[in-house]
Amino acid sequence: MSDIIIGIDLGTTNSEVAVLRDGRPEVLEIDGSRILPSIVGLADDGALLVGQAARNQYALYPERTIRSVKRRMGEDVLLPMGDQSYSPQEVSALILKRLKAAAEAQLGEAVKKAVITVPAYFSDAQRQATRNAGELAGLEVVRIINEPTAAALAYEVNAVEPRTILVYDLGGGTFDCSVVRAGGEITEVLASHGNNHLGGDDFDAKLIEHVVAHLREQHSCDPRENAAAMARITRACEAAKIALSDAPYARIDEEYLLPDRDPPVNLSLEVSRLDYEAMIEGYLDETLEAVHTALKGAELTVTDIDEVVLVGGATRTPAIQRRLEEMLGMQPRAEIDPDLCVAAGAAIQAGVMAGQSTSTVLVDVTPYTFGTSALGEMNGMLYPNCFVPVIRKNTPIPTSKTEAFFTMADGQEAVDVRIYQGEDRDALNNTEIGSFRVEGLSDVPAGNQILMRCDLDLDGILKVTAVEKRTGLEKHIEIDNATARFEAQELGAAKQRLASLIEGDAERVDDAEGGADAEQHREQVQAKALLDKAERLLETASAEDKEDLIDLIEAVRDTLDASDMTGLKRSTDALADLLYYLET
Ligand code: AMP
Image 1 (tube, protein in one colour):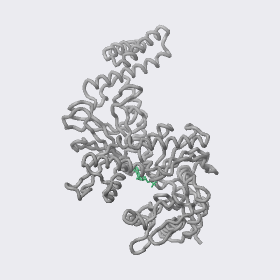
Image 2: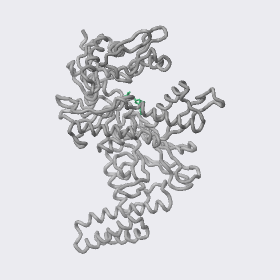
Image 3: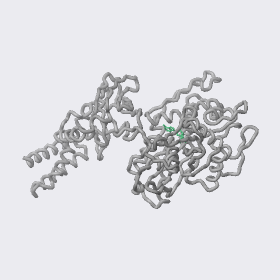
Image 4: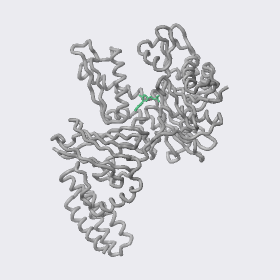
């Protein structure tokens, strides 16, 4: 009998199967995809459908299609499908059988054993029902493990010291967050909290509401009566939501949405990420409150967390990553595909039980953050060289991300795009790896939108494209070996740039800020650099010099705070003179 043990993530929306190969977890393909929709149905001719085929017929034949069976596990019910009814275990067994067959086809041998994951909150009855489903599918369930434990294992398989991991899992229809202690011999869930009816589908619903409101206002029609139109809107809204994870705008275009109307209704709507984020903000707040509750349950605080791990497709939403980072003070980890992470962890557990050696999941990620500079606020002041990350460190590659920027001056004809690699909030402390100028912009007031797209491929080639949104005017550059080339030079170059900044290098201010504004920013930047320098000198200055220094530092600060540019010039000149005198 085969010794192979497969790892299965039996999900509410989707399921996956993985095995350990050469010590590494590998999620196996089923019908060309590594994700099997957890949907079972009967075709016209009575044939059994599992996965995508069942999903395709759901809208047409809901009476002979079953989805989200996981929600019913452990209940004493029968679910109708066509002329017959089935227990939740039986329906789950059909999904498990499909996963088992896919594994056998790819491994070339019979598979008899599995590790299956379940939510941390599953009761004994629900766990037992899952075991029974395995048996019905011809699988000995050698262990049931908690989903957050599996996710933590996928990330921390080699950790020697126990680490405290927050697993934030937001799927299509469920949300869980768990505090897991993993590493060494033990892996355990300390606390778990969530909402069984919150997920990416709710985000879709917000966009759908928005589209329906638009159709009612702009086209005086209500698509909710028309099931086919609603199905198209639903699909388009999910696609738009996914697009908004990588770009600041998404279009929802559906022609002839209501063809019976005269004239036919053509839906064409642009949604901005900002508007979308406002729509889902309440949901995000709720998930963050759950994080606090889980931490409380584990009798821990935010500072006890060593890692935050993202699981579930909806965690690709940038606002989620941003809010978690703000709350926990660390960048959440998402390098393992959040849809496959639990299956990978189940395979690791399976491998451990089969006595195989294990190692971490292999993923290609960018070791650096790439981005550009723009006018922003730093230390309470406007500053022209704020670093704006576009591709964050540890993002799996290849990847493509787009951000929106705005021109600062009326009639601005050109922008300089500078590309930096690094992590510092001040772009000038990062490494500039390329720049280009986009000329011939439209003669429009300030606020002309420029979209900057960064594509990073597996060879480390970074392609940066800037597009004037209103016209499509485009310019791009390619930077070879962006992930490796500058490592050695980085520190020295950054130091040099800092030095030149302190000496008042005026050349660096972005053209995008142009004119009088630029002059003002330059002076403010210079004043700040002088203040830093003066403060450092305070420690070594004589008592008398110290008094003069303090007076002038205060004068510069006051004029800076008051944005009094004439006063600022006078006070910085005086301070510069004093510093010159003190240094010579
Ligand atoms: P899961 O149940 O883990 O498969 O998660 C499915 C949910 O993740 C669905 O609501 C998807 O629409 C959503 N999803 C998948 N990819 C993305 C993405 N790139 N950005 C936002 N949501 C996504």
